[in-house]
Amino acid sequence: MIRMHFSLFVTHMKCMVGSKIFRKYLFLLVLLFISALNFNIIIKPNKIVAGGINGLAILLNYLFNVDSALIILLLQVFFLLLSYFYLDRNKLLSSFITVLIYPFFVFCTKFISFNLSINILILSIIGGVISGFVTGLVCKMELSVGGIVVISQILNKKFHLSIAITNFLINIIIIIIGELLFNNHLIISSFLFLFFNYLIMKICNYCF
Image 1 (tube, rainbow, N blue to C red):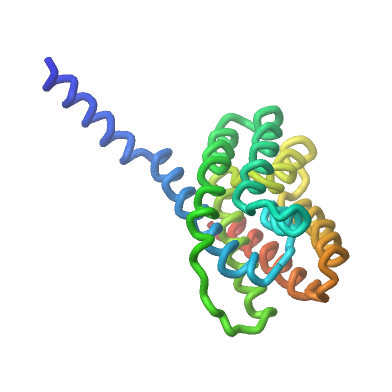
Image 2: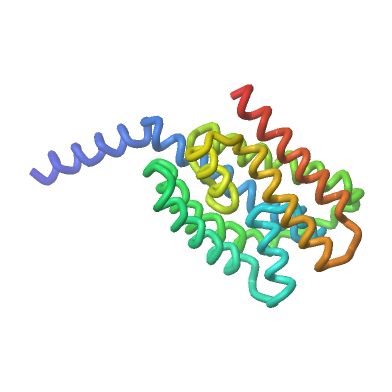
């Protein structure tokens, strides 16, 4: 009897591992890890306030000196509540995974540092490409990375507005706040990041 139950369990696990849903969420974890690396290696060290939950985390970290991973967790919980009320269950599950996993990945990778002697504008382009690739693929899979993009997905669902365009406009507001706060004249790098983030999101939407 025990052997039969164990055999059924193994069969069930094989079916789950081989399923599209499992592969989709496994790919989501990979993308979240890439996003965490992008935050700790490129975005945060160079204070690229290019919008999104990462930009908000940098601003709040600067203002209140609270760990970025904790800030991201709290913000993600807030946007998870928005997902619960306004998005479908499929996106809610992926948002819930993001709430738990992304801050954890950010915490685990914050000890990874590289001395990147690369021009800040080039780093902004690289960071924007990575961010756009991650967000674009997640949205294409009809999942959610949580964060600010949840607002764009809600607007898309309610009013059929472009996710990429509304996300772009919201992020511009965060960039302006960051420039006023830091006054470090890195607004060009932030807009470069945002432009390439937007561009790659659109490419992912049309090509994948």
